[in-house]
Image 1 (cartoon, helix red, strand yellow):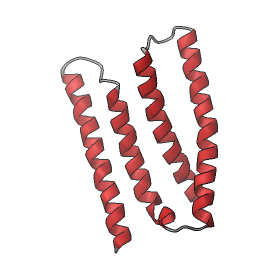
Image 2: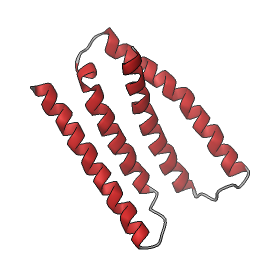
Image 3: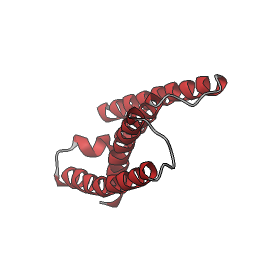
Image 4: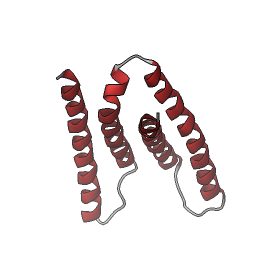
Length: 127
């Protein structure tokens, strides 16, 4: 029963973050502006909560499978993040987009959070 409660808490937190993200995007659309870069963090925290609700039963057990999921998930995310950095460097180098340093940091933070947890979900399904 405790497993279901903890998974439910992660789901509720994920939906709350998703609702806050939706509200910020809706307010930005109504104001005819682009959403603030901090909204990316809200979306990434929602993705993290949904991933944790899926991964909680595996992470609760302290066994070799949990260690393998973490190890492989971090390996996958490492190489994926390198690709993100190369793409972002190319975009900034060739002036395809004009981004401030704060925008770049918010984007990288959101991509890192999403990538790490999604890669762990993929590793959990695979192993």
